[in-house]
Image (cartoon, rainbow, N blue to C red; front, side, top):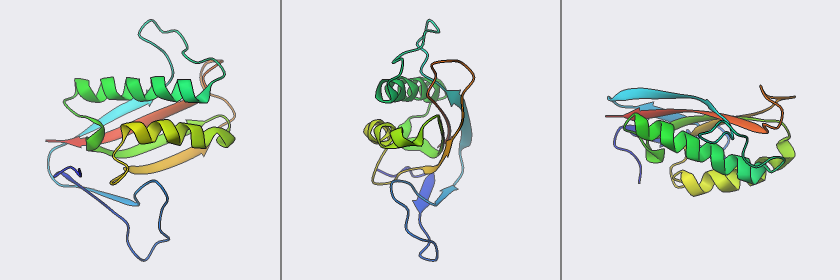
Length: 133
C-alpha cells in the first residue's frame, strides 16, 4: 500500500525504471533521514563476513530499527542510496531489499559501486529517507 503522504511515480518522459521509482513527492508530515547503515549487529560486530546476502539482511534490519525509532516504517521510505563494493552482487542485495520494501511502490533509489567502505569486511552501506506524519 502506498503511503498517503508520499506519491511515488514515473514520468512517461523518462525511461521506465526497474525496481525503483523516479520521483517521490512528499505531501506534509516530516522527513526522517537515516544515516548509512552497515552490517553491524547491536554489539558492533560485522555480520555475514564475505556474504552480501547476510550483510544486506543486517543492513535492512538496522534500517528498520532506525525507522521505527522515528515512528516510521518501510512503507514510508522515499529514497534509498546503496553503496556496494562489488556491483556483481547487486541482485543479491535487491533480493533482500525486496523482502522489506513495498515492491508495488518502491522508493526512489541510487546505487553506486565503491572501492571500499569505512571498515574491512563491510561490503555495503545503505542510507534512507522516509516521510512520516
